[in-house]
Image 1 (cartoon, rainbow, N blue to C red):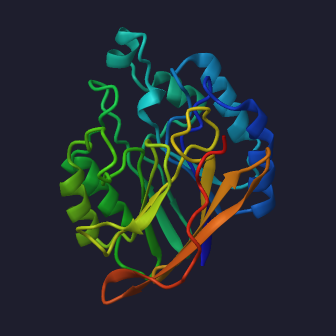
Image 2 (cartoon, rainbow, N blue to C red):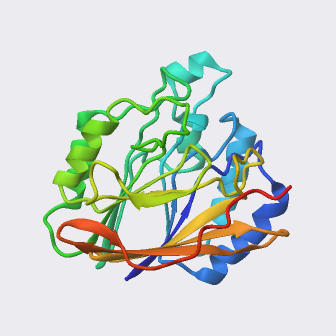
Amino acid sequence: MRRVLHLSDLHYGKDRADLEEPLLEVVDRLAPDLVAISGDFTQRARRSQFAEARAFLERLTVPWLAVPGNHDTPLDNLWVRLMKPWKRYRAAIHDELEPVYEDEHMVVVGVNTVNRFAWQRGKLSNRRVARACQAFGDDDGRARIVMLHHPLQHGPEVEKRLMRGADEALKAFAECGAQVVLSGHLHNTVIAPFRAWPQLLFVQAGTSLSSRVRGEVNTFNLLEVSAEAVSVESWGAENLEFAPLSRVAYVRRDGAWHREDSAPRARLASRG
């Protein structure tokens, strides 16, 4: 088993500074094998906001992997957004927009879903999906995880449009043997098999630091993962301290994920 701590939507520039130290402390204490960050490091992709995000990353004591989010390209500088959309992200976060992490137990593949020509709605091309599938290589028994910013499925309560190419990507990821898909963007926690593709487990993180919460407290997910079993523990901020709120476990049977536990209903609603 490998432990992956999944953060998303830090949104420096619209962040809760009082939660940064508690978040770093709990990450250090949990000591995961990997911290996976699914985009939106900044609110407006300004250099000062990227500098804060860089300082956060430099304090992590374990390996980390990240992809950009739609807020990580400038909204208020159209020329930079269209001509050099990743210049600031690459300078502060990482030069690689679609990084890959692998060890003897898992492969985690980052996919860039940001569309510079649309502010909110993402885009996922066949080429990017094919590249991600190729990065998994032959089936060697390791866990296979995809990470992207925009989710590949929306619930009925979501008003935003699903990103372009989502349905095709789900089909391709299922067929190439991916097992878990990490995403963010909507500032809400979701943990369940995809409706149309139950061989893929959908793990969406809420916002870890942003003050723009949407019906739940600031959260992150802690995964214990193998090719045949995944448990996800959701942690939330209460009284300036992150603590576990709920846990759910799934196992793979007959090529699909099945829930195994009787975990209590998640306590993710925002206080006040």
